Image (tube, rainbow, N blue to C red; front, side, top):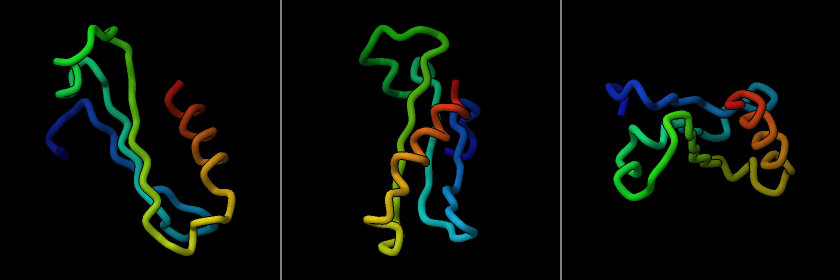
Length: 72
């Protein structure tokens, strides 16, 4: 995945603590592109929270919002 130039890999941090990981990818160039008729500018993302200390703290909504600003 690190060799794929259509993926951007990011660590998600909150208040100085790494709590997750996100992958932003170009849909048409990704292997998913075989399954839908996407536009050249389509982007997708995967978001994973891995630290149990991050659950139930209300981080998901602001992280999703920031990702939206970053992508678009």
